[in-house]
Amino acid sequence: MISALDPRVQAALDRWMPALEARHLRDLTFQEVGRALRALSSCYVERRQRLASGHALEGSGKRAAFALFYAPLHLVVTAHIVSALALRVKPGATIVDLGCGSGAAGAAWALAGGGDSPVLGIDRSSWATHEAEWTWHTLGVRGRAVRGDVGRLRWPRGPHAVVAAFTVNELPPSTRNALRDRLLDAAAGGHAVLVIEPLAGSATPWWLEWQQSFAAAGGEERTWRAALPLPDLVKRLDHAAGLDHREITARSLHLAG
Image (cartoon, rainbow, N blue to C red; front, side, top):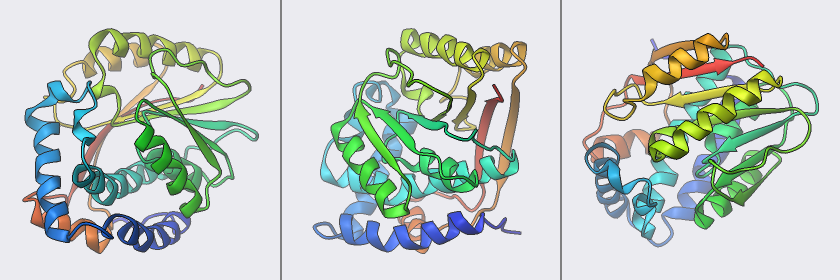
């Protein structure tokens, strides 16, 4: 049985996908994006040492594959988790999207959280920050993105909620450890924290250590397996790249703050 998305999320997704296709299939064919997606997924699975250097999103083909496939997938997964955990953002709070990519996770929390919270995205890639701002505008979410290192960022003033979705696994160990400590400090200061990562242990050998640290701070760890409604283009690319997301899996850590 396919789990339904929050109606606000589904409506935004229905607006976003045609705009994404027009934006990224203007100069590339579906077949070219499918080949780029195979190369990109191989990088995530088999050549993970290249992720920290930013090589995964080099070239228009891989960027289009990320925008057309992984970004909608991340929005659907994050929205499902936010809805299932009934996460809400405090009035006046900003959603801080760490390693925002094209802005999907921050947008998902803003939409599924039931409020009108603005999003602040941080990413080291200038392409990602521009894409994120376009995404938020297209989805009807207020937001801005800045270039920066998530390991050395300065938290914005005032209350905020922090999401790091499919980001921590790409960081080098020293940056990852520093970020964990900063997230725990943020939660101790009253800010909500949500971390989402792939279920595959090969991508997250550090997960048990993070889980124990979050549990000691009163956090919750969850494993997710669900059949979720995916846009038609995502399903076609999934098939073309030899992938299978009929069931979507993820794991999360949450601190209410």
